[in-house]
Image (cartoon, rainbow over the protein chains, first blue to last red):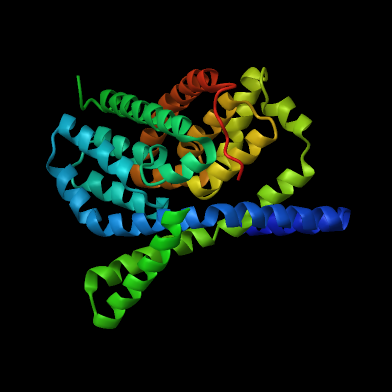
Length: 160
Length: 168
């Protein structure tokens, strides 16, 4: 994370040394892009924080912990798709699921859909790329996540 | 846009009111928002400054040469490498992808970038391996990357010349 700040500051200084006007232009572009999308980001975060309250981690652990392979796969994909959480919450939670005896296949479905499929990020994605592209990308990602989960399940000897 | 204008003030008002009257669920939602907001705020300013620098300094021809149409495998690899070094979540990947597209990256490579940024980001991958084991992470990478590439090629060729990018 520190590296990001160092790189950004370094490039900004370099840019300013090379061409003041262009750097000013770059900052203007940065601000314009940011200001346009920020309300959508904030709306997304509002939904995320409400959903995190409605679907707390304990609930996810309880449901996934008690489910068999196939129900687990379906539930995990569902939870992963509708929720959104930063890695520093998602992976400790996955570690916890593992300790609770949840299968690798289920966990894989959960983490992969969490990262690749976004119901809550859909409005933002739609703004950038249009409805159809956003929809099909999410659908394709869901399929990829399920196939990956099945492969994980096979390698760990959990299915077939 | 209209929804945002109503929802954001209404939400903030509801959270503030929850604190005033001690409504616990409202307070928790407020705390959630604060946590997620902080996580995003740490990355966003840098991300957008870098996007600004990218858009003003990097020529379209350069992007076209590396990630444009008919760059084939080199384009895929560039998209994946860029994704691996992306920090933050989709809220960084989307605007980056958008700028890349504006600069002439092919749709296939945009889809690869978006998919890969969800599964191969280096900080995230190391974190994942520490909780779920290296074996898990490796299998996931080996299986998901080719799938992302194949699905992106399918999606990209379907959308080429068809998708409309909204002027942001």
